[in-house]
Image 1: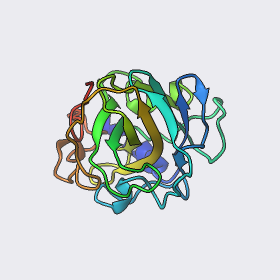
Image 2 (image 1 turned 45 degrees about the vertical axis):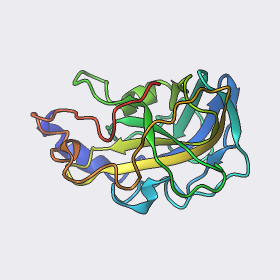
Image 3 (image 1 turned 120 degrees about the vertical axis):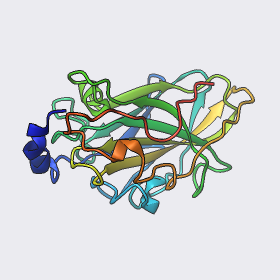
Length: 229
């Protein structure tokens, strides 16, 4: 991205915060029924914060949403709590960055406070116009659908959705994270290895070592590769 846009990046660094709020199971809008709702729409303070697990002071839901292995889940982000209008960007202010989705098998999705996360979806950056994950998210009214791998073992899972905003420059990453509580049914036997949050990302990782406004910036996927089953 062009270095000349760095002034625009600085101006946008304090605006247009957002939260992941809603979940769809297939075509069913479960809204916030199974969402661990975070306390506000501000970003996490850094990639090593304990908040990287499931966001800023999330409140666990008393519900767990059923989903069949091999079917679709959709996570939904918006700038203001309760605002699902497609007239407003899901995350504006030039908050460019990837959209990443992880899952983790847990004993009880309503109470789990630790987990091993595997990545199931990612929209990064191809280097072309409007190809950042956040730009794709905005074009889809804040929604990112993905398929629960058919081979995944049945049971309770947390779904962890993340925007990793990189607009503020190297070393100033702004993660936006929320979790959703689901129960996978009719699954297979796969239990993929995972990573921890915090811990999966390090300040020395290639993605965080250079500003996206630097003309030589190259996108390098953070964390593990996407697991498709």
